[in-house]
Image 1 (cartoon, rainbow, N blue to C red):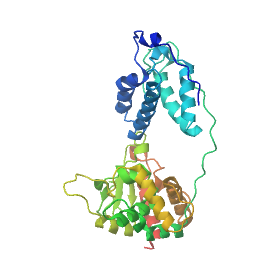
Image 2: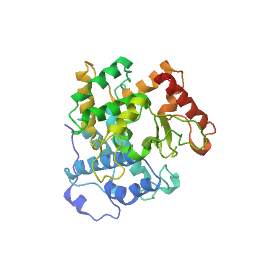
Image 3: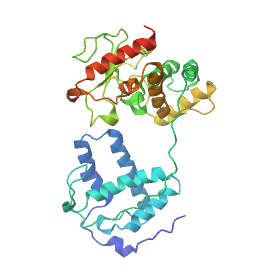
Image 4: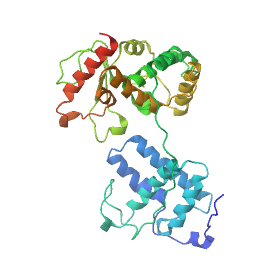
Length: 336
């Protein structure tokens, strides 16, 4: 239990010309993040940290105004987080809080990644990073384990309609292209599936019978706004054709999943338990596995093409060559 340093009521009742941290976030920081096309997931992380900050101080006398903020406030909030979170997660929350405070600092300090400082504070308090436990090392699923998952997709309880089919498609796509979880279940839309065999990259004349995905991964959208183009495996193309969507939905999620990350993780684990996998893999493991599978089955560097690591767009002189290499790799893996 932390020893909280409460403030006298008359201190909190004094008028202040400066807003609180959550107020400046809503009025200044969030609009800047949106105007600079920061990833929606990044903005949600900011919002989550600000909400946690507001809830904590709401239980302890009210959120301090910027001109009240001291390093004691940051230390107390950090200690509160550390009671229930890992060091890594504490530092992540505190990093977002610190970024907002830094943005309020003196303009003479120069610009930040989200623009010119607001000049509300002459100096800014800083938090002390907490110790982090060693990061978990990613694991690689064997192809046999992937096949076992595909054979036990009926173990999933959600989605309620076509659950096994949708999970089979999700697992194939995860271990084929290493697509990140939010893109896989939420951001990929029906319109991103190109059924035509003709490559959607104008400079490439190659064809691929089973169609393509052409989408911009959310995490790298700011640096690489051009679509990542991926040839699809034959089995996945058939599964996508079989997925049905509620009538009237405009451009629904490609795999037909509801937006609930807790359900995604719980059902992915349920499938693996049914498949006899004692220590379930994470979605991050799936991305790493996809990369390793391409390296082992085709050649080093192939996985980077499917995972979107290579350059794209007007600055990518050789991206058309990369697409051709992906098709060649897909042919080898599909036995064509």
